[in-house]
Amino acid sequence: MIKLLRSHRLFPVLLVGLTALLTIWLDQISRWDSHRRELDPDKPEYVAENMIATRYDKQGKLMDRLIATRMWQYPGKPDAYFENPDLYQYQQGVLQYHVTGETGRYNNKSQQAYFDKKVVLIKPADSKQPETRLVSSAMFVDTGKRFASSKAPSVIYQGNSVANSIGFSYLESQGLLNLYSKTKIVYAK
Image: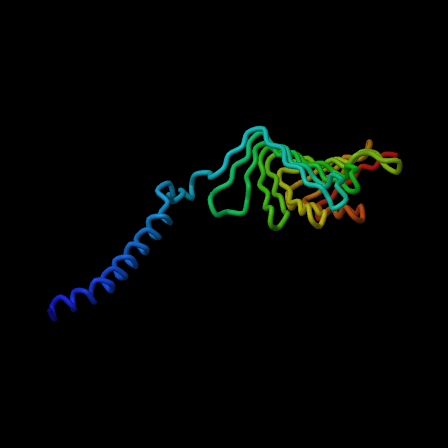
């Protein structure tokens, strides 16, 4: 009779223990993702063809637009890479400048773009001055600060005037273009 009482008391304890083990096992199984795999850091995680990305300001007016024939991004990297990037910057919905290149990359966190190979920055004509074109082999553009620069040889065209320089910086908010070194300017009215 004593043995019967002990097994009678032991059964609920075993039942609680088995229920706890079953709960832990079911929890682990439900969290397991059979499709999860490690991504190859040398292969793009995302690829897009004929991409257009548009950003608007708080008033809903166009702020910037990036168009590219191809875009890709590597796993865990903040930069997106582009073929034939075409960046348009607006203020109050009015085009301020436009940058094109053969290749480039853009960091969405820092809002900075790097353009390579045959880069052209175009500031459209307005009532005060004709169209301005800055041509270089490489260019850095900070879309947040509205700043562009290059350390490479550059040619600037404005109307019939031409300037050659090794590097420049352009601050769009002030309309200020600084030419760095070995500058030669041919000014035409």
